[in-house]
Image (tube, rainbow, N blue to C red):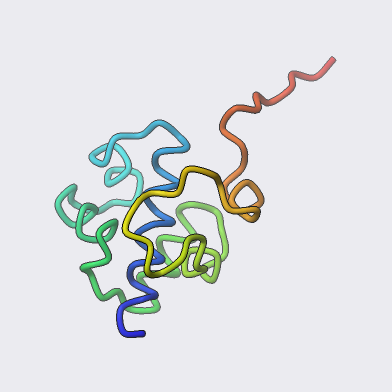
Length: 102
């Protein structure tokens, strides 16, 4: 369907940001974009070029295709209550603290 990839990218960026406890403005700074542009990305309103997707993925140290994967049903009108099985594989588990070397 038209716009599905834009919405998937937006949902994935929002999940990434929320998992890390970042505000939209702080996340926009990480990506080097304006906060209002960031909001448009998260809402799936922005039509990014492939180069833009690659740049964002590089800044987040992930594969561009991971940003475009559908993690929730495209027709869902609400936020998921449970993480998709691939969620932690793609974004890491925010509840798990890195272990310090012994």
